[in-house]
Image (tube, rainbow, N blue to C red; front, side, top):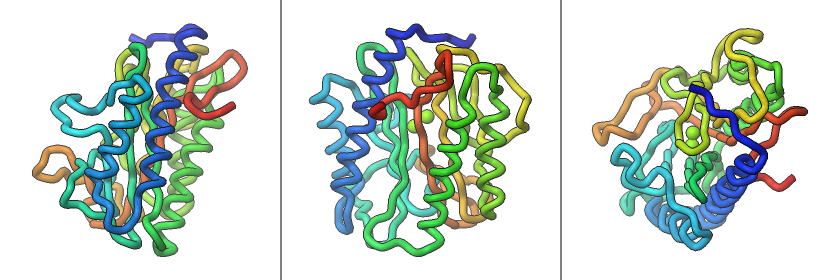
Length: 250
Ligand code: MG
Ligand code: MG
């Protein structure tokens, strides 16, 4: 079942996503060589709680932390740890979810630690552009396949891989609502987008093969070939005249 949100519900979701983006900004500010991913997790959790929110991932299906922190060949769902210290040249992907006043916010960003190589820089730039191009497709009357096709065409033209195993999702009073939002597909196909629909759009793009393997911790998803991955995510509402990226200043 697809749940469409009212204008006031979209405002509530905007506020939840504002807290997500503040947490991501604070994490990015603190991330540096020598800092552990557990340090970053503590910073995010404190900020979320101080804003009256609740970390959405902590306890979700047993996930133990506020953030997913995925380094280099890790794609998504990396578990923060005091043993994982960031190093110069790392590519870090950070995913954060917040519940505020009953609504979920969800966003992710990738960035470099210190000086990263040209390939990592290009991968992050292309992945962010995949997200921006997908967001540009969000409007009433467009279709889900337009989103996936926008991501896939841009990533593949750049010579990169599109992860199939994980997809974006509807979001609202639950973290994961219908519909699923694949990062691949055919333009003009799939469900028609209607005002009030909110989608978490989250391209996961790899420097090599798109194939994934899961670590023994049951969570950490990394590239099978050991090449780099990047991940960006926004929660995006369909509005009567286009879209609204929730949590960003307008
Ligand atoms: Mg997320
Ligand atoms: Mg998500």
